[in-house]
Length: 335
Image (cartoon, rainbow, N blue to C red; front, top):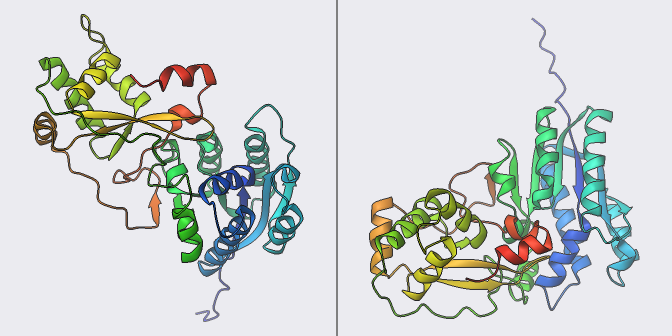
């Protein structure tokens, strides 16, 4: 019998950072303390250390951005990224917002076939645009890790990819850095409301059809504290449609008038959007939740969640942030 110990298998990773997107997020979520560049470099360094602790060596890394147009720390951040094994990849800004997305996607697929020894691809972005890239990499037998902040993670990356790992970008930052983000003007579990407002005084729902709409809401979205308006309107259109004078928008408006829900306008990137908040104390809501067997989501305690995890308690703004401007304006108008 051969007692020689086999050498451990080396796992190699490619880390691809949508730095343009990351910088924009940090700039809008931290008003004091370290610069967005410093926070981004800290995140990348912590990510590299985490991969190393898991036995994964960063063999290739790129960060995509129009670095010259970001801030005055451009030379510092490019040098710092390079020292972490991430090569700055200059992508000029154009009128098309997805320039960095496209270059990252091209490089990911190219690396997949040009360097077959790379077993893991780490994409630092939560945009829906990367779903086809993730799927292509997984089809090629690669492990895919998505790193993103929870309030900027597209549900499409969870729903339309069947395997892979998600890492909360906030969990990679130090406690001091997280405190800066928490104190920032754009931070909350689902962004900041322009005018949170209050529920109207609870009254009886006008018709049984409105209770049916509330039931659709609870059955399909009852796990979430908030519901993005566009997917809700689509689901109401599919399951109820237009009946007489009632269409999905009018049903939501009537539910708001009855104090069962309220709509809040949120600042987003690149578009603002609308969310619906349910009044858990409204008698009709209580009944609808009982009928649907809805349980309220507990605070997420795990830093890592698997794609497709049905207990993931965050929604995303995929129907707002990635839609054309004219379509977005129509879909996100408060009813």
